[in-house]
Image: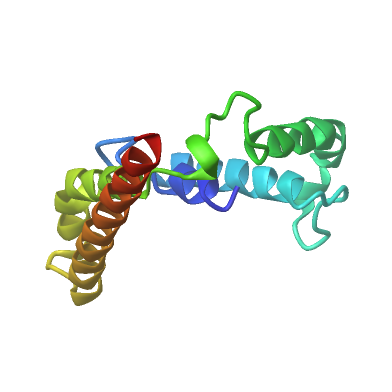
Length: 150
C-alpha cells in the first residue's frame, strides 16, 4: 500500500490524471488512502484522534480479511513462474527492461524535478554498466553451455 497510496493522493505525479485534484477531491483521496493504509497495517480499530475514522471502524474490520488475501496474492510468486535452466535468470534481459522503463519515464522525472538530478544520472550510468556486465556474463554462460553440448 505504500506504493499505491501516494499514487492515490497525487494522481498527477504518477500520470493518472492531467491536473491536480481540487481541495475537496484531494481530501477524499487522502481519506481513501488513509483507510487503505489502516487496513493494510491490519489495525482493526481506527485512530481515536480522528472522530471520522471511528465511524468507519466496522468497514475496516469487515474488509481486513480481503486486504490480507490481496496482500498475500500480490506478494506470492505465481506457480507458473518460469525460471531459466539451472535457475539462471536472464539478468541482461531484466536490466534492459529496467533501463527501457527508465528511459520511458526519464522525461517525466526530469519535468517533475525541473532539472537532471545527479543521482538519477548516476543511476542511469550504473544501470548501463550493470547491463553491460550482465550481457557479458550471459554470453559467457551461453558459450559454456554450447561447449558442454558438444
